[in-house]
Image (cartoon, rainbow, N blue to C red):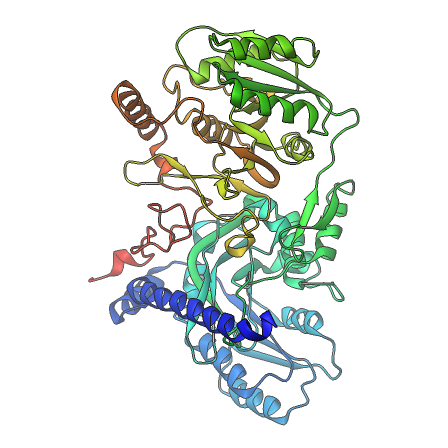
Length: 601
């Protein structure tokens, strides 16, 4: 009855919300993504000056598409400003006579269109592979009937190929387009993220591959469950290596969608569980588990193994009194955490209150707990560094005393990432007490041009999958908060620990993460380790007096020391605002025009 009464209203609300989002995106397109005649002239001049222009072969499988879809896709290719292209079409035994007539007519007067017809239906993978056999270009790009390439798509790909000869896979941002030609639902992607690729096809439709790479891995696999594009991307990355993947932060693909008033908007390219399982097995990770994400069952969650016996984790909990916060924090650690190999070091910065001293006395009888006296003025970095020097564990877990455990498997999840080769710091999903998100990774440069960092997606609902499911998957982040941060002890010491001289209170975790990244490690955030965090409850806010002066000095240090990194977070697309912690499109994109030099010449 409720569905019957409210269903039409909910559909109208969904349509209204979609229309509002589309209108905002329309305005962004007008400001940032429409080429003027001057832009087009400049692009042509730039192309004319290039000493080399790699040939790009576009693979188009055809299986009885509507005539208008096929015509639109081919017209978009023929309109490309980049002249060095060929369109390789495989007709997968289409039964509709208009398809054969249209293809013969289109290819008759255009030598750059290469055409073959299968006598028997083989499926999308077989058709793409037959199209691949026609390709003469150094690079191949993907296209589906009905989908469109903007006129500068191959130009941007060509420039990326010329700029980086080591690149073997190139991908770009993409959006959707409805039957009326209106664009919506843009996916402004991060730079390449190996963990995100395990959960979704972040490379997507807007992609190009070296032809020799594509042929070397056997092209598309037939009979792959789920998304064959995701399977292809996984195998290509495994063959090419993570350092050969490049991202163009520009919308270069419009995926055709039939839109309805109640249509849900989701990620552009679905994942392939089968492809991911085969990828894990073939790359030496057959011991990794694979299960649906609890928040988005259609999204895979890789469960990384933990050795037996598990490594010892040294949990560092700084405190000065505040027994009301410390008591539930310790109780959760010691009684509601299913990871047994832990020691808890209470880094005591001069506690005096009887309640706190009584709590210390209570826990002294537990062999897992040690109270480490660290007197002196509050210096978060120094307190943690001294406690780490006393730690025995292979893994260090920095944990605020104002956190509280929610579910027992949180620490195992964090350890499973911290011990992976190439991983630096691991951050958790932290929640406010009202079950909204407090921490889902750190965005660098927030509040540009003076800001340093902030927590993205703060305020989202606990059970929200987030935009493009980014709150429900493990992904790389430039930094994570030290309120709950796991890192191998040897890495922590190798990069010098926390900076107790320049960053006594604020941004020491961001600085640590950036030093880990500079040393070649990736920092990751996982939604599968959840804790409550009563943010800054134990020390108050940095708002006035000496605290404010110290905070400004630490901001100045970070801006001086990490200016380039703070202004270019690779995991936050330059089409998104760095004056908002949500995925709000910026009024003016931070990526300059590739053809800017030729404007006005």
